[in-house]
Amino acid sequence: MNSTVQRLLAPYKGILAADESTKTIEKRLMAYGLQSTEEIKQAYRKMLFTTPDIEKYISGIILYKDSLDFIPLLNQKGITAGIKVDEGLESFNGTEEEVTKGLEGLSARLDKYINLGVRFTKWRAVIKISNIYPSDTFLEENLGRMSKYAKMVQEKEITPIVEPEVLLDGNHTTARCEETMTKTLKKLFELLIKENVDLDNLLLKSSMVLPGKDSGVEALPLEVANATLRTFRNSVPNKLRGIVFLSGGQTSDQAINNLNEIVKLNIGNKFGPWDISFSYSRALQNDALAIWIGKIENVTNAQEVFGKRLQMVSKARMGEL
Ligand code: 13P
Image 1 (tube, rainbow, N blue to C red):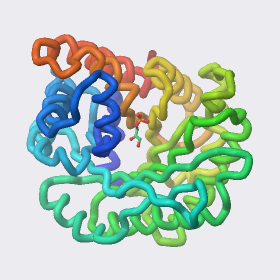
Image 2 (image 1 turned 90 degrees about the vertical axis):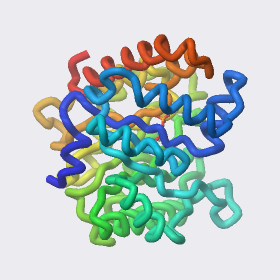
Image 3 (image 1 turned 180 degrees about the horizontal axis):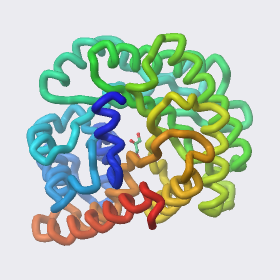
């Protein structure tokens, strides 16, 4: 197995997504009345990354381009540094669908990041569910760009993560989510294989199969686990080594409990041989941010709460919660 993939999938460990874009981190901080200055962003991320024992639970951290200064600190702790390399969304043919951009100039950006010590990358695509979306032409274009990104990253001999995020927004059923995710993942792997992407040196970052946020339905962890693993069995090649989840707007407890159930249900590789772990942002960070709120005197308490979340998600990643 590729050594970065192996390191990222270490038992009891997973990935912390701390790659909130300028706009996203601003939204998160603003919710607590904090201005998103460079100083506050750095202080927040420092609070997270210097949490005692973080390296026991976190194998890799995905950074945004504004936090590359943290790479030496991560390396000191034996945490692999990654970076988000897509450049957000742009409108697709004047429709409501949005495709991910960022292929232009990517090669040069990768060279710079690799020089600084980055060993893996992330590219996120957003897939909305409605009665008419996602359209076939949109999936072809968006996942085609994602596949080209993955190939380019592998040519630089580091590891790409592909993240086709199927959004929780909407009032769709679990069945509609399963149908959409199956179609999306089948198309993605068809295009990755067409680009000659090596599935041994790749991680899939996926949503879980869930009913829409506005459907008024809350699925039980076992239902989520069955539907999610069935989706993977029907669309993800066995040659892929690992799948990591995003939390996607689930509460911290939901994201952790659902992960635990998925890992448990796949014991003995009943649905497929992939190693299953996490790559959460909000589900790990939310309660720590709520305690920290920009105050130095809250750092210890915030780190304690963050550390507790890490302990829980680490157990869930092994199905031991
Ligand atoms: P959430 O866990 O908050 O969904 O973030 C994961 C991520 O990296 C989204 O791109």
